[in-house]
Each structure stands twice: as C-alpha cells, then as structure tokens.
Amino acid sequence: MATNDAIAEAAAIILAESGMDHLTVARVARRAHVSSALVHYHFATKKRLLEVVARRQARQRTERRVAALGSGSALRALDALWSAVASGSGAVAERVCLDLALSGRGEGGAAGREVRAALAGERERELELLGRALPRVLAGLGAAPRLSADDLAAVVSTFLDGTAAALAAGGVAGVVRASFDAFWLALAGPGQSPASL
Image: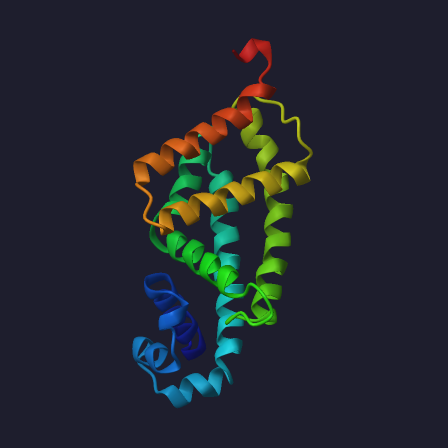
C-alpha cells in the first residue's frame, strides 16, 4: 500500500472509531506507522487530508451500495445492501462520511468547504448509479416504481444514510434491520401488480 493510501486509511479508521475530535496529525501518523512530517509531506494540511479521506470513503460507500444492488436476485441484493451499510469496511465508510458531513456544516465547520464539495460530488455520482440499479431491484420484488429514477435514488440514498446513522448512534442492529426491511416492503408494496400479490 502506498504511503499516502496508508495515511488516508489510518485517518478514516480513527474517524470511524473516535470521531473528528480525536483526529490529529500525530495520531494519524502513529496509526499509519509514519512520522508526522511524512503526513504533512503527503497532505499539506489537515483539511487536505480530510478532503482526500472524504472523497475516498464516499467513493467506497457508493461502490459498495451499488455493487450490493447488482448482486443477484432482489432479495439477495437487499441482504447485500444491508451488509454493505452495516458491517466491515462498509460500516467504516458509512461512519466516516456521516462524521465528515456533520463536521462540515456551516462555514466554520472543522471539515470545510473542500470536504463538503468532495462529499457532494460523490453523492451526485451515487444518485446517478442508484437511479440505474433500483428499478431492477424493485422489478425483482414484483413492484413497478411510481417515483422517477432520480426521486427513487434520492429517497433510497437518504434512507441508507439514516440507517448508517442509526447504527453509528448505537441502535440495536436487529431493530435497525427490521426498519430496513420495512422500508423496502413499503417502497415495493404500493407499486406491486395484482398478479404479484
């Protein structure tokens, strides 16, 4: 792994485990097994490091979400989507994006304009990709979506962010999963054809 990748990954793990308040250059350097000077060499400022982390983690989040939706039958896709949001490195990316989005609120936010721009740019890409993938999943559930692809993608993306936030806030995984399943039932139910009932 390249040094700048190791540094960005260390920063992401610290953000996921401890939050923005505990992210320091010294701590990132220790986690990446490099010197603080090397962190500054690769990322001139903490804001630049946060921008890179935001872009990388948001891209990973998008790729996991979209890949999950393409993983087999509709029900398998939804199970994979749950796993992408709730476990492993997918949960890290979800948590980091959430923390960075929250810390970037307002002009004085710790993350700053560059981080907000990185997250917003990736969100546009995610919405486009979800808009292409979701109709197939809903068709696999026997539903014909009543929303446009853009509106459907926005609703699902926002719901997934809420799911990740509930898990990050310590929500009981089984309860959050039940809400996840209920969301998909509610989304698919009204558009189901009589033949599929």
